Image 1: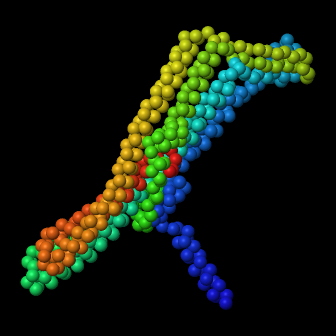
Image 2: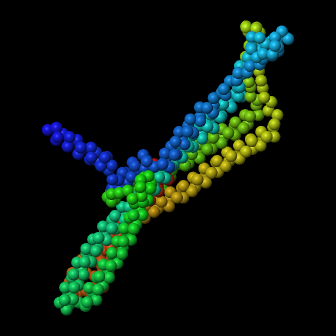
Image 3: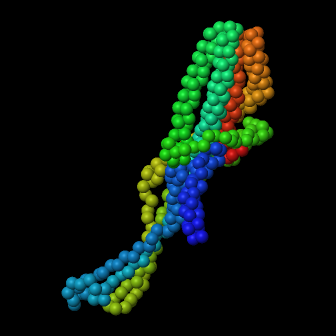
Length: 418
């Protein structure tokens, strides 16, 4: 019994890592989960955002106070030799000084740092959207490659059967030898297509693994599931435009840049006013404190030309931030409109192929095959019918994958999933 327990434990320990290391690739969600946890560029963006958030509180904090010790009359009027003992010199002043910025400056500095932290946070969101969009598009190509590879294998089997029919008819003197040769040529072409698809598969695998921070040759499952498409009402130009304005992290980052530039401009104008320093000064004579003083220090903002230059700089920075946001909004709207139009075209193409072209091509091939077997059609007509089925199915797969790629572009632009 003890040996059985040990054996079962060993089996479970050996199977544990394999069970934990599920091979991704069957769905895009399996890739996104890994990317969010492992992509180093995304980790960098998040850490930079966290670092920027830590700069907000210090930006509005008071500077550290200063302690100043002044020893006066080091020989105590000639009564003692030169020394540095506070109790033996003539007198010792202890100055405790705290710098105080002009009212409002600390809040403005905190606002500037807060805007920069919000920008960094939005950039981290933008980094994830960019990464997830690239993964979604790559997965669409990965799924398409798998479907085309499966189609290629089906056609190889089909052309093999057609070749057998051609050979039987040739042996019976019902068809020329050229039919069998043309079937072999078609089969060779399909084998060449298979090699190209295999090369594309390795390229896509390396691309996806790179996005997941995995070795380029790490295993991936064949793509099996495509993401469902949202209802058409959610992808109208009006609905997507509203989402773009509200949720796009790039626009939000530019809005934070504007807020920071506005606070920076207000701070530049506030620098016209002086800062202060206040202090308490106890004076020690002998072993006791004999008197107290207070001090007030004011810096004199006399370098007005330098301040005017900084004020003009802050005005230009604010105008530049506003112009950059406007330009980004125009570019995003243009890209969104193109992606939405491409999505609609993909939907219509899929409906046309699946509802009309593919059924017609399949019926045409079946009729051509029956006609060739009965000696009523030539081999060229049969091959042409077979190619029409191939093109129709490839077009259907391409339309389905293309819609997912355009959906990924739309979600990257609007800043959220549909």
